[in-house]
Amino acid sequence: MITLTKAKTTQWMGNGFGTRTAEWLVKGNESIEVRKIGNNWIAFEGDKRIARAWDKKDLLAKLETLLY
Figure 1 (cartoon, rainbow, N blue to C red):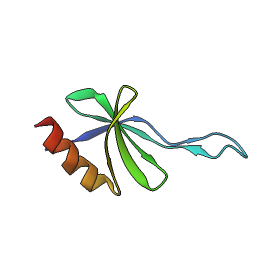
Figure 2 (figure 1 turned 60 degrees about the vertical axis):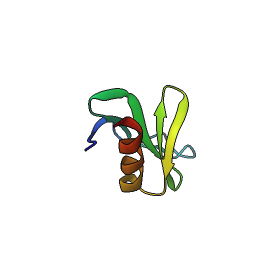
Figure 3 (figure 1 turned 180 degrees about the vertical axis):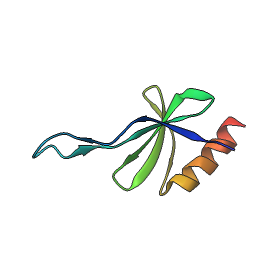
């Protein structure tokens, strides 16, 4: 089972700039970063997008098939 650890919290960027979403790392494989961008949850390894889903639960299921 994949678990996430929070790397960065949500940040307010100032009026007119909105917010920056929280960043999560896959525990045990910290090179994979998970973020919510728009309506999608996306997993990145470096600059490469490796998985995408509509919700976090589905994204973690996809990552589990890729990693294990």
